[in-house]
Length: 114
Image 1: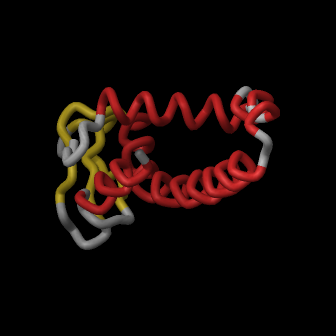
Image 2 (image 1 turned 135 degrees about the vertical axis):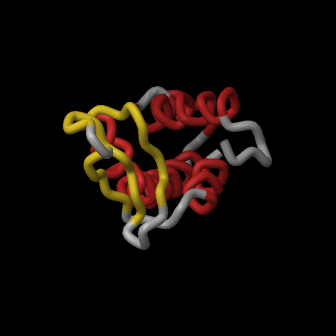
Image 3 (image 1 turned 45 degrees about the horizontal axis):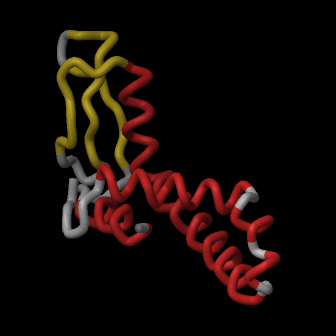
C-alpha cells in the first residue's frame, strides 16, 4: 500500500510548496511550488494553505519512517513463532499498518493517482 502513496507523491508537482496571499483576499492563500508553478488556490484559508504546503514536504519524509518501521515489523513477524505473533499484530505498529492498508485500499485504488 505504501507504493500507492509514493505514486501520489511522485505524480504531484515537485516541492517544496509554499502559501502566498491570494489576490485581494488577505485571509486566503494560494499554493505555489518553489519553481513558480500554481498548485491550488481560491478560497483556501491560511491554516488549510499551510497544511497543504507543508504536507508536500512532510508526506515523503513520513513515508520513509513508515517504510523503515514496516520493514522492522515484518522482520519481527517473520522471526516469531506463529503462535506467539498475536501480541505483535496487536501492538500499535500492527494496528497502524492495518489502518493504513485499509485506507489505501478504500481511497487509493491500485493504479490510481488520486
